[in-house]
Structures are given as structure tokens and as C-alpha cells.
Image (cartoon, rainbow, N blue to C red; front, side, top):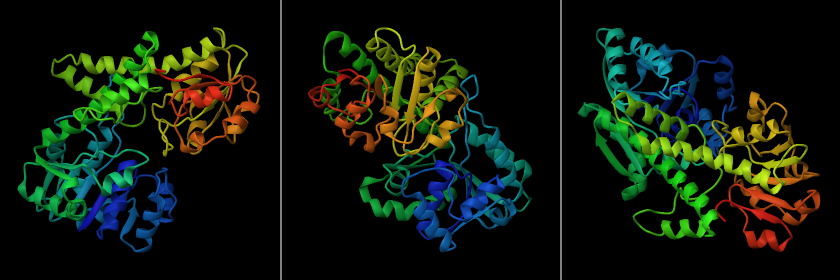
Length: 438
């Protein structure tokens, strides 16, 4: 098929590259000349393991094409994906302005029959509005159907999640649109057999599935952090508690790791949006409001641990921080716990030196990190620091020589916000070790 994606972020670019790799001709429409030129030359605007290789391969094969011009790709496309950002407004509602702007531009360039898919995470009812907008602006002879195909990609594992998804959700009123999209996804479904489930449903149900999935995962994380906080108070070992809970096949172990809180482009935004959706329909989603509150508490708990171990004050102290991105294997700084924890420590008089293997350039552009010292590696961050704090569980941090780190620190103290070290290992080397829930 000929496929167009509008948007080249984590979702649009990854999914476009995978569909091109499956043999389709795939266009990606951007809105920034510099970024589009960079993409044509294999220079990516995001970091995602394995993505650069697959993009370059398909650009060279002329299956993956980048443009600024809607009329270059839309009229010839069988399928068009809207994959643009829906950031939260101050109210928590999703900002759909870019989705609607793109829908208008797509509608004006349709020719023949096209399936227009909203892949962006949008509130229930958005696809209906997109459909109505396109009807108003499309050429008279153009025919189209609208479908909702939500994404379930994890940053850092997005290519694997696209090639080997747990489920593919397709929502539409049109059987023709469903058949077209099943055919597009057929190689993925066949490659994975019974491991990939196909869910054919309505527009509204597909829209709701995405928010429900992310909000439930955020709930599991906040539950884990609440259990960790309580475990510390009662003298239980939180990680052991959560591991045993996760062995229950009805629950499962994923997303039951306590830590410094969740962040990123999805969970904070989607939890807020679902709360706002519920409010709009007169339902007070108290559970998700508590999920948000517990997540904030998890971040503040790290800050409080640092103060406590430094005798109640961080003023005049030097703190080494390893990890800035919200999770490993990404350069995404959106709602990262580091953006709450580090500014709070600086405000209270600490000098903070930080290192992250991938996200440093993105972090340097953030105003809340004014006053933060960026180190060139973990060792430079640790040198002459009063305490070491772990905020992202990068593999290279797990493999650090703690003996070497101990020699560099003024005091052998670790606040492990991701529980990447074992207390026994750290304490045997002479560290004061403080984890989460331990």
C-alpha cells in the first residue's frame, strides 16, 4: 500500500519506518524544513534504539519518503495516519488543535478512497469531529472513512512493540476501512501468530481503550510506590512484597517496581486527560486523582531522603545525580522525575551535578535546570559529591564500579531511586544505602 503519516515523533516515525520495512511505500509529512531535510539524510529528531538503522535502510530503498507537502503524498495514499502530539492544557484536557489542523489539510487533498486514521491519543468523540471536518473540506468526488488505531508503544522498545504488539486495536464504523487496515497489519499479525490479538471495535471504544490502558499501568506504578512507602514505615521489604504480589497470574509483575515516580509523554498526560474526560461527563475519577498524588509523593520522597541523610539540610552540599530521562533507552525529558527533584534541591541551596548517557542535550534546554552542572560521565558527577542519587535505571549505571565511585565521593552514601543495586552489595562496600521501600 501507499501510506502517509503526518507527524514524525516517537509514534509516527517508528510506525512509518516499520511499515516501510514491511514493503509499503510510506510518506512522512513534517512541518519543519530543517527536520525534514535531516530525516532525508538519516538524521533523526529523537533517540530510539534501532530506529536510525531501519530509517536509513528504507530511505535508501526509496520506500520511506519525507516531505512538507500534503499534495505530494495524500492524493495517492490508501491510508493516512494522524500521529501528532496532543499535549495537556493547564486544565489537563488534551490539546487537539494540531490534530484538527492536520485533519483539515488532509481533507482538502483527498482523492479517490482513503482511510484516515487518528493514531494520536485523543478523547472519546475526537474521531467523529475529525470525520465531520473532513466532510466539509474534501473534494466532491473524494471518498473516505475514519478509523481509530491507538498506539501502545513503550519508548526505548518502540520498534519491538510495533513489530510484535500484544494487540492491534482498530475502531471504525466502516467494514471497508477495517478490512483495509487488517490487510495493512496482516504481515505483523501473521509473523506473531496467537501472540498478537486483533481487536475490531467502534471508534469510541478504541479511543477509550488507549486511555484505560495507560491509566491502569500508571495505577500499578502508584500502587507499587504506595506499598513501598508503607513498607518503609512498618519495616517490611517493599521489593519482596511487590515481587510476591506480581507472581499472582491475575496481577503480573510488570509495572510493580517502586521508584522515583513515573513520567514521560504518555502516563502523566493520559491520566490527566482521562480525569478531565470523566469530569466533563460528571464522573469524579477519584482513583486516578490519587494515582497522580501518589506519583508526586514518590518524587518528593526522594528529595526528603536526600535531606534526611544529610542531617536535614542540603544547603552547601554537592549532590551527584545519575539519570535525567524519565526512563532508560530514551532521550525524552517530558515529566521526568528529575525535573521535579533536581530543581527542588537546587532551590534549597544544593549544588547538583548530573549525568545521563542520552538526554543531556534535551535537558540543557529546560529552564528548570538553570544552575545544574552537567557532567561528562558518572565519575565526573560523583567526584567530590556528598551523596549519589540514582534517578534513571540505565544499564551502564547498574554496571558501574561502586568501589571506584566510593573513592570519588566525599561520603559513601547512595540514594537509589530505582533500586538498581542490592543493599547487601552496597553495604558490603561500606556505603550507606537507601533504596525505595527497602
